[in-house]
Image (cartoon, rainbow, N blue to C red; front, side, top):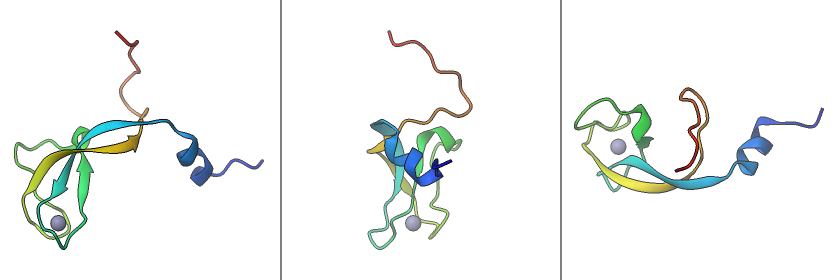
Length: 70
Ligand SMILES: [Zn+2]
């Protein structure tokens, strides 16, 4: 049993994912768009506004069923 969670994270393929990042330059807070349910999310770390952006992230395969590529 050599499977560790860390290892699996590294092996996951990545893709450009829509995220919200904190506008506060001193803060590195961000969150995935999937987990944002507000029109204008607020950073959970410093309460600044967040802006939409993109980031290379491991593809999430948690709740929603994976759909076949079009
Ligand atoms: Zn912040």
